[in-house]
Amino acid sequence: MERLFQRHDDYLRVTPTDYVRDFMKKVNWDSRLVCIKGPKGVGKSTLLRQRIKMNYDEGDRHILYCSADSVYFSNHTLLDTAEEFVKIGGTHIFIDEIHKYENWSPEIKEIYDLYPQLHIVLSGSSLLALKIGLADLSRRMLQYDMPGLSFREYLHMERGLDLPAATLPELLDNPAGFCIRVRERCNPLEHFSGYIQKGYYPFYFEDKVAYAPRVENVVNYTIDTELTSQCGVDVANTRKIRALMQVIAGMVPFEVDIAKMSRNLGLQRLTLLQYLKHLEDAGLVKRLFSNLLTTSDLQKPDKILLDNPNLLYALCPTIPETGTVRETFFCNQLASSGHVVEYGGMKTADFRIDGKYVIEVGGKDKGYSQIDKTENGYIAADGIDSAVFRKIPLWAFGFLY
Image: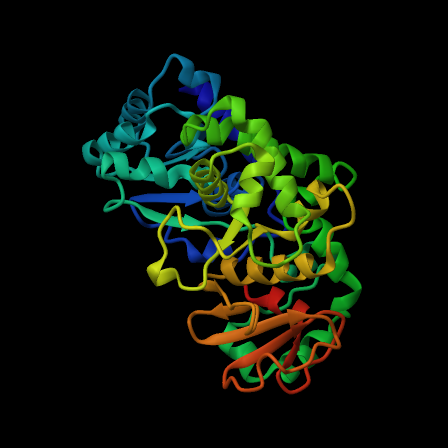
């Protein structure tokens, strides 16, 4: 146990608290069992350590932070560790990378049932949902999905700008006023391309030079380790999945030809659809459907995008297609802020949001033809800094969280 406390102290010592994401306020830390899920690299470990560092005294042994991939757990179980911790008065245990501990869910359930005085916070892969149900933890556990940085958060970390977030109804109700308030503080267009290329994963601010290789490492780790260990993906097919990611990165934003992709990659249609579902669950791609109410898990998606535009720049062998970059940014920021994003269709606007708004994404000269007969239709236009009528700057949708 002393070894764990030593590592706890070491981790907290190097954890910065100069910027804490607003996501911290969304979590009900008083709950007995909390799980924070998210793709690799979005800042889950930092969030847990900041929570401890900012709310408990240094050296407080009622609190323990540990990582489930620690060598300590090669000859200690979670259950034994919790028992020993409670015996010395422990009240809060934070377990990072929980997905790296084999068969973790039954032990967490037993800890929860045996020690009602103990608060448990877990963090791990986006794929944790696959395991949570196995031990009937879903009724006991509060789950949160943590995204990468929004454009607004990137501006705070890159330029020190503390700008307020806006809800989607607030933005759509008075886009001109919102843009004026932001432009009084900065020129968003000046920083937008930087965010698009390198601003989604917080580790950019640790080493800006090595950012692109680290993004590639996120993709490779997710495919080679998480998909194979948690989804049962055949190791022999990981190369084909990486090729699939590159195919998606190079696609123009039109409807998907699954049959052609299947032939080119040498994968059965059903296998390809399963892999796309796994990649979405892991936070690497976004599948879009025209009607989510009638969609099954293995249905052919109407459109496929990478999860965020930084992946495009890391994986695309050439400069990514501009339309794909725009749509990827828009879809990511809306989905990351909790909105339901559906495919709008070839003859209407690009996206339907929350079943209510239709939004066409394009350049600064984009016309109103696809939304002119729609009451709640808007254009998200790249390359403009102010809103005009229902044409709203694309960057403004990066302020939703």
